[in-house]
Image (cartoon, rainbow, N blue to C red):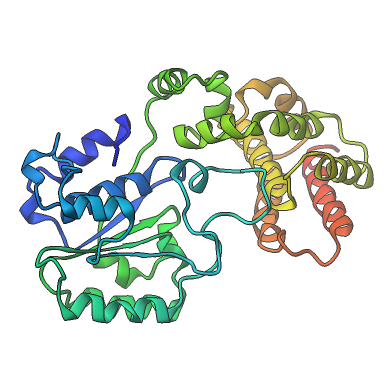
Length: 351
């Protein structure tokens, strides 16, 4: 189990008084910051039977409990994740943003009520090792409404030494009653210079650009570098940065990218356009960019003929249509509709 440098202070504050840990923790923050790695390290720490010999408050890594946990067989640990998705997977890919992949993100699907109800025996019957029991739920926002209500009942009166660790990058989707029973641990992005040095230490070039495109998330940036996604994204941006002609021509460019770029799917295209329009809006309203600092010149050129209101309306449209991007009835019509909304936003400032 490992911690990343930007998590160390969180770990130290959380475990300053280990005997006072709340029974339910909610790890929140953007994707790509290692929340799953942190949660696994904490679960191992809670289950470890020889904590005193561990370094910096970590699990020892050598006792029977640690060996079982590392092998995924500890009887007092449960991992709950969507069964009809791919699960969280490893941290770098699971928490990456905009991965040009199959169009199906890790953890897609829902956590169902039967998965939560199955925890009742685990929580209320007793511990196999006569110590702590840990339930890790990720991503928590994927619990369906019935499952959330079932979880709430368990959280209301948990037995002693039972700990719930929930992970969420969209915590506002959780029931307020569930939120009220958890202590939130907020993960923040590291300083850009520190993140760039960390990427350089991993042998990753173009750290500044990667961090911008992934919203400052080092693990997402590392995953992009490993998968070679930066070059694909540059092609997408090049198509967006060109002077638009008409919706059909713009849609044709996007369709060609979807066809030529291995693993690049429609949901990723929508997300790319969404980020581009976000930066157009931010540049128009506040004079700065979040994701595309390297493309400021074309952004300024395109934003000159637009209004902040028109761009924000387009961004909101993209939020809505993103929900159906995985299964459009007609891909070509979907692309033309999205292109029409985009071009209309760029022309809102023209007389």
